[in-house]
Length: 313
Ligand code: CP
Ligand code: NVA
Image (cartoon, rainbow, N blue to C red; front, side, top):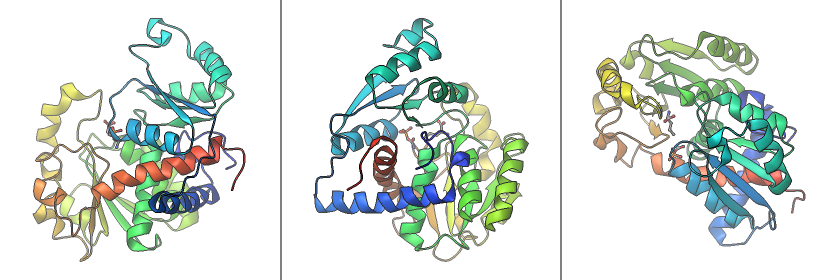
């Protein structure tokens, strides 16, 4: 990897994305065969959280352990002195003296950028209000596993123009996936992000289109993807959003518009019966949500290895 950090997909060169995927395949195969691979022995990852997590925490923690390293969970709001106002600058400098890498999940994206800028060790973004790069890299890896190709694949993202949608913009633009964004008026991705992704897409052949009508946006999609309508930090808006987003639910009727062999993805956690129905989540002929969740660990092991490991096998 040329990048020392993984803060946003837009910073990654396409070669780095495919390097992550190649290592993911190799490391996943070893894991499935029960062959130990411990290139991070003696290394410690600090995992800083100021938001909840099931997948990100556990997949990073187990992944780091399987790579021979030590994962240290650090609650920003409860245990770190950041809670009492210690600056990111001081925190980054001190943590760089103890740790070999940092994973951070927080609200303000600039906090993750500052940690990377001020510290001397790799920083991985485990979700901010702006981006969720590990999730979308995993999603694209999962699409390759399921479809065998990326070129010509059409992903329909339906729901909120949030951190997941923002990362999809750059994931699709960089890898040549076609992306339909189906987002209610007033909740779209920021125009400057869309513009930036469109510029990248010009060079890769990715076509990014915006729809207001759910059925039109899902038409002939290979992947129909959704996320919660109210993200962490927006809990108070949930009721209002549930009303505004009600025509954007992923349900059986909507999926009749998708391609014949469509797959359904959701980064999880899902609010069943809200943005997606039980019937769709549990239709294992099409739903790949749990394969997607599993792959978080395999992809992140590759990222940890590439950013924190000194020697390859
Ligand atoms: N998809 C995802 O990041 O899940 P968690 O919030 O459980 O980590
Ligand atoms: N958009 C969601 C993603 C959760 C993984 C959130 O930020 O809460």
